[in-house]
Amino acid sequence: MLWGLRSVTAGITRAFGAELHKFISRCTSNRIVAFLSGIGVTGLLQSSTATALIVSGFCDRGLLTVGAGITVMLGANVGTALIAQALSFDLEWLMPVMLFAGYVIFSIYQKKGKLAHIGRAMIGLAIMLLALYWIRDAAAPLKNSEVLPIVLKSLDTDPIFSVLVATILTWLCHSSLAIILLLVSLVGGGVLPVHLGLAMVLGANLGGAIAPLMATLKDSPQASRVPLGNLMTRFAGVLLMLPFLHFIQGYFQALGRTDHQILVNFHVMLNVILALLFIPFTGLVAKVTMRIIPDRKDNGEDPGRPRYLDIKELNTPAIALSSTARETLRMADIVQNMLEDTIVALRTNDETLVYRIRARDDVLDNLHKAIKLYMAKMTRGSLDPSESKQYVQILSFSTNLEAVGDTIDKSMMEMAMVKIRSHKRFSVQGWEEILDIHNQVMETIRLAQSVFLTGDPKLARRLIESKDRLRLAEVRGTENHMQRIREGIPETIESSGIHLDIIRDYRRINALMATVAYPILEETGQLSESRLKPAG
Image 1 (cartoon, rainbow, N blue to C red):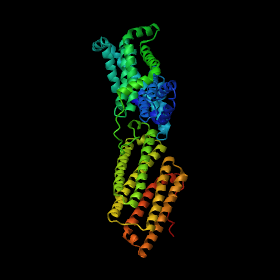
Image 2 (cartoon, rainbow, N blue to C red):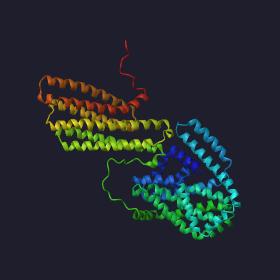
Image 3 (spheres, rainbow, N blue to C red):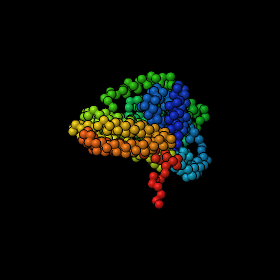
Image 4 (cartoon, rainbow, N blue to C red):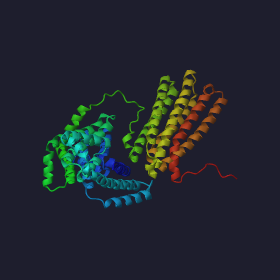
């Protein structure tokens, strides 16, 4: 059942993850809409834990207030209760239909987009339904067990211990839905008494709130506060309902509910009551969480630490790739700043600035390593064709940016130090040529970022054209440089090696940046295989 539930969550997340993120971010304008969005998203994901992690990520980035996030979670808790209600019905006929349809869809559309993930979710749902019947059948002999009454007696005499056992079990399984369905099956099969099942439902609700809190403890305080608020509301539900379990059982029995219906109805009732009680006071709950988890003291951000790579987004390829793209653009900004300072260092002979530029290459190396490790954790088989192309593009562009940083650090800054320590100067004409090529390369870097972000074929074509213009500028510059040597200009003669090496490095950087355009132009048929004319 846990495996089937994981398949449903993973399938829906990978098929509609980006849309669900947008839906949550747009549906928090007021508390009622936020509450309903929590029900809807959890209804699709079949996991309030998955919803909690999405909401925590939004709060971490400042896209959602803690109060709004807690409101979404109140809806998510109702959503998962409604799922348990739906799955408790006799859906035996649905299992083979979902299994067959899911297998056919997954087989036909495997690695071809969203339909494959939808097929996987259908298979997972069928397995969940099958597991429920297996549990019910396998548990039937327990009614005649000699050991079971002894175990149940110890739980029966201590309802708090029953709540604790269910809490720990749910926390270990990371799924309140799975435990609720297990309890429903055991109660429906006559293995577990109803009043004990009600107590364990409270524990399952409490344990379901622990997993997302533990998963976000190492994140920022903003990310941890929503799961903490959710845990607080569920703990309040346990305190509120525990003394009245026998009365609640009698009330549902008076309505003619069967044993397993009593459990799922109580589960729904509990979460609806908590939503009604706490929706008006989510702001107050948010303030309490801020006191329990205060803001951390800002000791300065490590520039080499990634800002956008969230391990919890790996199950949503569209979101994970978007995050790596944002981190890669951070690298591009650092490269652009390094190159802007490079021309200043060459002009002013500022040795301190050279060391600062070199330190930024270490930042680039750390970010590139983080991006590679993050992308290595993505399952390539879960990507559709367009996502696979984006995957390769991001990895290639980030690698080229890291190579540009190395060129600036290990070559251009090395030559800058030689120029500074040997007190060499460029001729006026030579400096103008370097400055002109520098400006062209800076324009290429800005254009490459736009191409990487938009995938626009027109911009990609401009980028390749800029590469050809720089090549011609290098040829002209080299010819002019040699002419100045022949004319015996002293500054040109003494700085000749540095001058030519800097021009060479600029061209190498320009070529690395232009490579982002090739896949786009190849796909649109705008790139020839070779610049060579046919032989003969």
